[in-house]
Amino acid sequence: MICATRHRRPLLAAAAALAAAMAVAAAMPAARAAQATPPRSNGSSTAQAAREFQFSVIGHPLQHGRDEAALKRAIAEASQSDSAFVVATGIKAVSEPCSDKLYTQRHALLNESAQPMIVSLAGSDWSACLNSSGRSNAIERLNRLRELFYVDGESLGARRLPVTRLSSNAKFRSYAENAHWEYGKVLFATINLPANNNHFRPEAGRNSEFEDRLVANRAWLHRLFTLAERQKMQGIVLFSDGDPGVTAEEGFSLLPSFRTRQDGFAEVRKQIRTLAEKYKGKVLLIDAQRGAAAGGDAAAIQWRGNVGHLHMAADWAEVRVAPGAAALFSIKGGSAEAPQ
Image 1 (cartoon, rainbow, N blue to C red):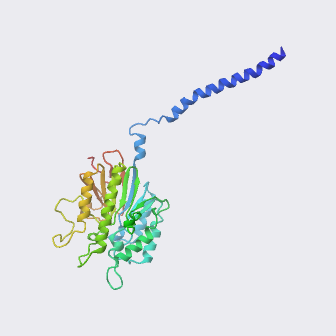
Image 2: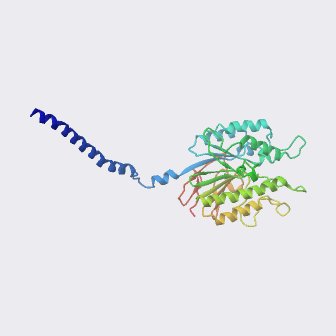
Image 3: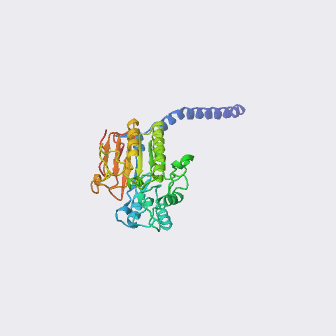
């Protein structure tokens, strides 16, 4: 009797263990299903909210008679915001020296940004520079800025953002200042368009810097729109110093003496309009010029079809991006884009 009991106990223990294992196995699919089921939300979708983000733009306060303190404040405030990245449109005022010392100082200042910092060059940074003889020193200074600010495939800042430069193309190896990056199904890019008539020089002879950069920018814009179409990007954002006048009415010129002076933005304006007409998404151009259209200190996006234009009316501003929404771009705390 005792022997039978001893043999029965291991059998009972094994049966109990088997039953427990089967119960755990039966419960696992339900647990996995519960984990895979997203939580329900009231109102807007959680997934939609996760796709929304914002970025900041520093509107080159130095070119409006401000000192470096204004730039420092703009960098600090923009860095403290909940922005995915910050774009600085210009590093120095026309009145400041085009010296290596100042370039290095501004590089260090912009590099202190807590957020990824992308630098978009302004004409005051290079195209207005003169040498000791009073002659243009633009090309040499532009090359120095490229060596200092665009040495690799990353942004500045404590957190780095990978970027792709036009200089990755052997044919345009010099044009490292033109960079693009993707964020939230939107393609962002800088393009070197200085505000002083795109640095068109009226002197006789070949306008070498202007003409060579025109070719590079033409290839760059074609590449950007092709990439946006291929990747099914919902929008393209272009940062520049000058306003090419893409949203201006036909026959309107930003140049006061249009009839006697060549419009340095004519080709790029025509190309952007042509490419935008074929593009299914929205195109937003942001420049560092305040202009009358900005309306004082109130920033507003002006639209012409699927092309929007934003003058930087303040030292810095935040732009909200809502992929999938009727208003893809809007100014945070300012005038919002009307759904199209």
